[in-house]
Length: 117
Image (cartoon, rainbow, N blue to C red; front, top):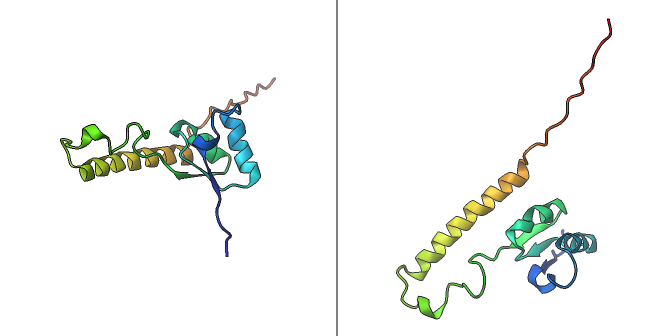
């Protein structure tokens, strides 16, 4: 049976004088399985380090969350807005996973051989 999985929350350690790449490598070397709430721009580096994206921020930031006071009488019900955002996120995540699974190949130089006759 597999043991418990461990992850770290990105915002708890970011902006503390360590570069994103160094932090990702350190998390992998410690033996963590994944990272939570990391910026989408970091997903490829996290995956390359052999880590999983454990959770996604979903709606953006706390400041732009779904329960803002000015949204008490929104044009759309909250459940509809959540469903729309989740559909968008699923599309984004699937697109990112597709890119990671099938990266654009780098051009490979073809050696040219010449013969002397």
